[in-house]
Length: 121
Length: 121
Image 1: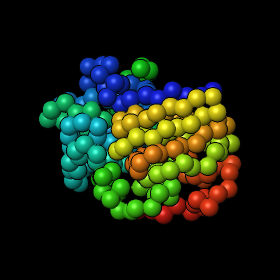
Image 2: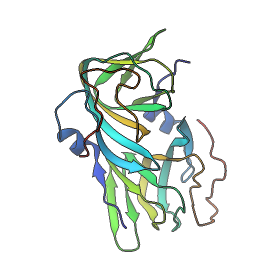
Image 3: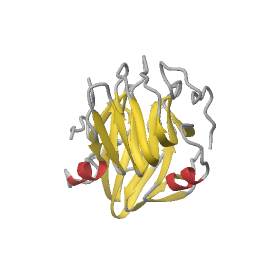
Image 4: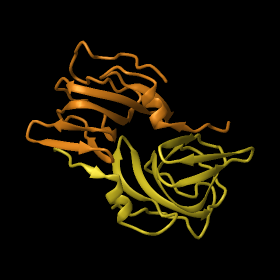
């Protein structure tokens, strides 16, 4: 079946919550999600999933236990499985995620912001 | 090991060839590639791989047998396995690909532009 195109800005315009990834595409057992960060997230890792973060608009810091990496629009980073990380955004930032379909946003941690079943938009 | 960040514009600035995807990241058996299109590619499909195209800069048409979808910066499309497609770009366009590591750019077709072993940049 012929697919339709989607648009990142349209997807980000469709929601306002922070720390709640929305699924925008499925492929090869992976998902593309869009998420808005603001504030500091919980320290966590993913046992079996590598996770890619691509900044669409704004900036945030990806904290690791040994250092912090600051990312701006157009920057991306792949956090390998097992590596503890914590995203921190002084102001709202729009981020695209590429990760396996089963990836839980808080990984190894449980938090009020854990989203067991992300919404599709 | 703590990962480094990468930047899409830097990656696109690192090469000039058309139709020759470059690997910029590996995760979960998938790869993120960057590619520049100009002109018309070969009609092809992928038997086992869904393929995502995200426009970074410029525009192109994704032709399907039944219709054409025009994509601009910020637009993306997932072409499911088995679906014949042909990218056509009137002017140079920069595209990010997300697909399984084993994906061949020309899929089912063989062409002078087939890249058996994409370069890493």
